Length: 243
Image 1: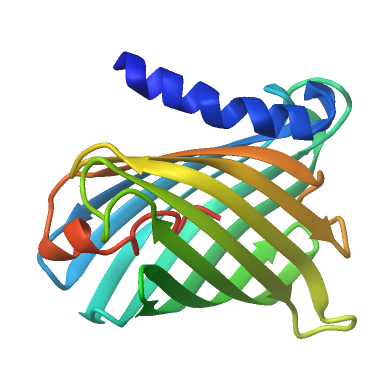
Image 2 (image 1 turned 60 degrees about the vertical axis):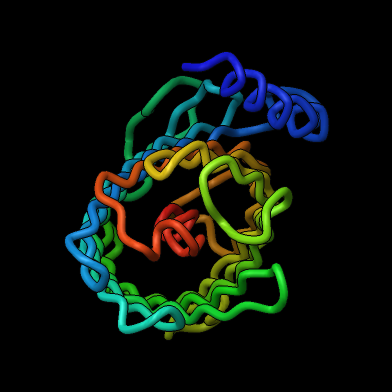
C-alpha cells in the first residue's frame, strides 16, 4: 500500500479509538466490497464483512452476500441480493459456539438520490426475508445518508469526503422497532477503482437476537472493476451495500 494510504488510515483511526475509551470497548467492523459494472444500467456486486466485539479480538460475526442492481436514472436504482449471516456467542474468544444466529437472507431495495448543493442525499428502502434459527422473519429498513466531497465539487479520484447516516430497523411483529444504527466517517476516493472509508458506528438493539455490541470502528474498501460514467460522478456505490 502507498505510504499516504497508511497515513490517512491512521489519522482517521486514532481519534475514533480515543473516543471509545479504550480498545476493549471498541469493536471492529470490516468490509470488502467488489462491484462490476456491466453497462451504465446493470451492475453486479459482492461483499464480505467481518466483525469483532473487541478491538480486533473476540471475532463473533461474518456475512457474505452478492446480487445485482439496475439503475433507471441518476436518481433511482433497485437491487436484489442474497447472502449468509453468521453470529457466534461472545465467550471471550473468536467465533465461540454455540451460534447465536445462523441466517440465510434475501432482500430487495430501492435507492433514491438527489443533491442539495455539494451534499449528496440518499434514501435507501430495504425489505429482508430472513430464515433464522428462530424461524422465518420479515424486516424493513430505512437509511438516510448524507455525503459531502470536501476538497472537490464532486466525487472523482483524489476526493476526500464525509459521510453521516442513520438507519432504522423495523419488523412486522410487536414491538416492531428492532434496531437503530448511526454512522459518521470520512473517506477518500483513491482512483476510479478504489475507495476507502473509516468511521464510527453506534448501534442500539432493542432485541439482541443476531448482533451484539454498540461501538464499532468501521473500515471499508470498495473496488470497482469496470467503470461507467456514474462511478466517476456519483457516490452511490460508496457505503451502499455495506451495512
